[in-house]
Length: 136
Image (tube, rainbow, N blue to C red):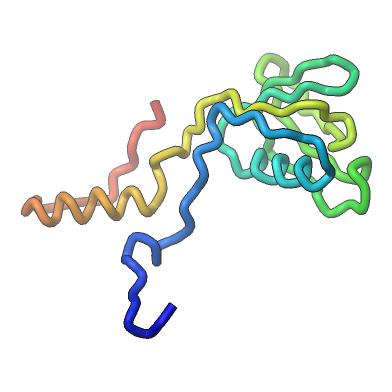
């Protein structure tokens, strides 16, 4: 980037988040598994995990350990949708992953708020405040 080029204000505010809702990543290599589960941790919706023993777990990934040397050393922690117990699932046990739940954070980033704020300000609105948007 040259000194004459400028970064738009919206891009200075943060990163652009991927829309992962509905994505079914390929898990054919260790790198793909690690990448998909890192994205699963950042996702703000439910996922569907198909395990190698045939079990299907639908729920929210709330924690992970991704620094192990092998997939057996790494795990995700999941709050299943239809049961009270939290599960710890090894990366090595996961056969398939799907981003099936609604991403509750989609479109509700700081960048989106700033864009709306600027539009309201340009339209001459007064008393523009920080009001949270409803999740549903």
